Length: 93
Image 1 (cartoon, rainbow, N blue to C red):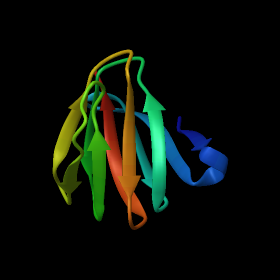
Image 2: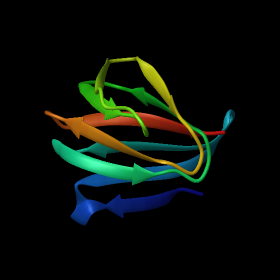
Image 3: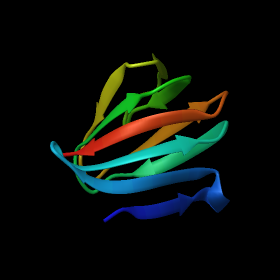
């Protein structure tokens, strides 16, 4: 069954599921800045809009647009900025 998650006072909402590719969430981030922690490797794909990411240990930010993906390592924190409400898909490896 599905599991709904809310973070940052409801500005990030996701639905967890078991997909054919394993555990996943589909969610939406409201415009804003966030810091997330990982417990597994995460592959995130932007569905529409864009996410600007600062990977752990990096000083530069990189922007990912519609249908672009990025990978975040296990057991790290990473920063996210979005200027518009942005839906995403996250696969857990």
